Length: 326
Image (cartoon, rainbow, N blue to C red; front, side):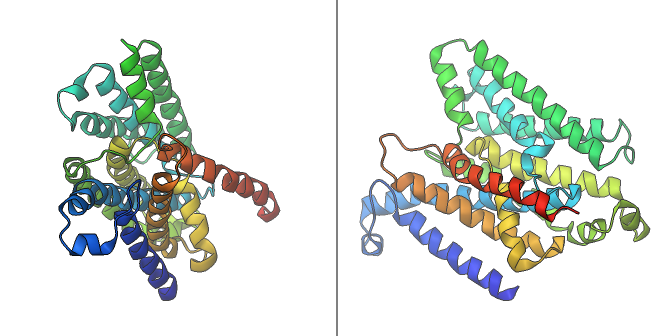
């Protein structure tokens, strides 16, 4: 386990260094250390915020995916399960639709965060039957699916009634997911929510270990299922909602990272959390470096790239599951 964490940390540090140097214009390390003003400006104002957002988003998706797979005991669970991603998307789309983003660069992220919190609150309300302690994991999953459908319909409605082609283009551009053209303002806006959300999710390891024995057994060990669900929903809403509100929808990282960690960390949920966090950050950072260095005309959107890479893995996972089922 220690060797796995050390290896992931070293790979992550190497990826961070590559992210600061790689792009349409490659920067040599000596250009930075020699004080080349243009090189320092590119690294500090363009690539550093992008790198930090990639780390925050990837780590958030990896940790959230691992926690949700432990909560639902479903290997196909990922952060979009609770309607967080589409809720954040709807919030940002509303800001674009009504032109609020033209007033401030932080309007989109703020509306996206509010959308994620509203979607998760609705999921928790529906999943608990309107009262804490009621309902169960299946009810929560069904509520998340319903909320995801509702918010997706809202996004489609906004596209259908877009006031002008520019607004429709901005909405579609945001929905594809990207880390391009991000600033330190957006980093400092979402980072506190990401840290708080991930902190909440990181405290669930012991409860998830008990839950792997079944809900009745977990409750007999002193685990409050309603408290656990609330903690996970709040953590996912804050962390994933904040990150998604800036980067747009980026899929498959939350699904893939926990599965890549399991062969090395084992099946115990608490042991997967940290490797999945580091693995998610590494995967998204490498994907972002790839879209910057692959020259096919316009830069490939990060959400499109992760979907193209993640879909074959998803198919492989679906085909593999029946063989491992009892």
